[in-house]
Length: 243
Length: 263
Image (cartoon, rainbow over all chains, first blue to last red; front, side):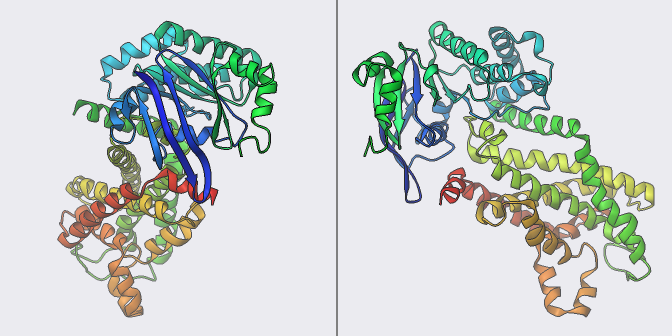
């Protein structure tokens, strides 16, 4: 069963189309990069995948459950790291995580067990009592990943998670999430507009002007459209490329 | 059921922690009503004589009259401000996290409204404590009986705030809410003057005050503070709370705001 299945998905802001007939799936345990220039529709897609917006046309299934007709089991399988930090800066790391555990209906005891495990995995155990405000950008992102994994989702969405991080932190974050993907069998959808965050072995989706203009292994797409990922991306997202 | 309780208690705990950590929030919530009580009321007590009206059984100084209205003013500001932030925080920040919970959206919104209302009550009782020291001393039993009344009014105003914020594009900043909602609701009510005084001044202003939900909220609290029950005010407040909450949940849709921005 696919961790994520998007079928014939379209979305419009009034009369302006933002997404047009998207079709793609993400198998269990796969890391996929969703690449697109600014304004390609990545944020709209994330808003639809997280049920912030209602699906107007098409279908989204998470772990086999339709987000429209069975949102509860679908959302239970979904962990999200938003582009802009959604941590409460005045609360401690642990208080932020406890809040999230409660939102997912975990008991205090269950929450404690999961918080201990995720903080250990993110190497943040020592910082659990610190206010989030005192953490640097890289650590805040790791807290958000720990939070997104608290309820043990099968699909992790990361919406431009490297925004605002220095190059070393970006690299470390990418390696860390790929490792999670390999070791835990979690499927990951990582949106970005930065080519260097995509690795040749990644599954790659390229979004341009609301359309999916390429999907498949990154190295194959690169070979088919110019030899390097940069040239393939430029060719596929050139003005009028999808019209 | 346990998941619902865990979720609700988590939302309340978060509001409580934020309240405790943001000490200036309590201070700023108290400054406004205290200015009215300590300055405005002191200046007006000579000008305004309050006849014996229910629930009071004797002549009262003006300060005593306006305290219930000022407690509701705290609820009005908090309710509007809290709801406005819920709406315009929904595309980023904490509302996005809240909405990724698998529990029903209506439950999440209702929990959030109830949690912010409970925190507002702390501010109200801090104000009542200062008013007590200043000499406005309702009976102790009234302070207890006022608790459910205050909670109901807080919920009504929060739900109204959320409904208005969902529906009216012009309410995108707090200044708009102040000018078009808070001030008219506050001044066109029985918070600062009894309605019979308004009737003497202008019958149509009187009727505007009489149908204002805030008037009923103030009267519910005023009667409860003096150990009495105002059935009409309670029915109006309870009915409107349910109506506003249902409409607010029904119309809460982040997509609408996004479409409006894009348009």
